[in-house]
Length: 144
Image (cartoon, rainbow, N blue to C red; front, side, top):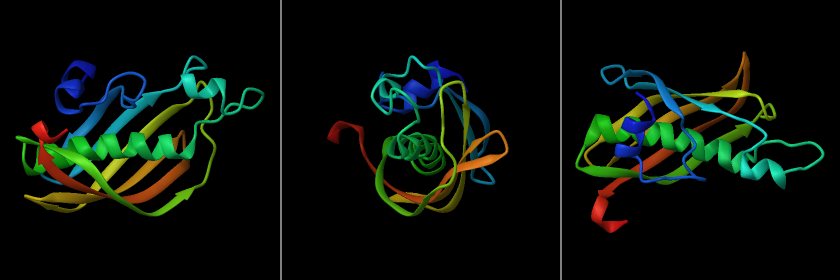
């Protein structure tokens, strides 16, 4: 799935659209793998931190939530949009820096007509940058 297809599902736009493409999508197994390419031109690197730029953890979680939101939307109710409900057991294990390719992997734990929950992992190469359980609620697009 390329960026044109992603923006049809996610309401986010620059600078908050944090998924560049979907590499893998298996609705039957409830798995999605997305990608975020990071360059020094990302606005957050200018202030976090100028002499040692790293991606803020909350934005890594947001990127995971966006990938998971695509999965929940496609798996549950395509007339509604998945919004972040909760984040549990989040752990940050490795810094994400300019030049990294962040791989966003989400595996469904639960799906229903009201939302869903995924186990999410962000990887840089072979290192886990972040992992968490992320919950979503499905709402009408008109409510946003």
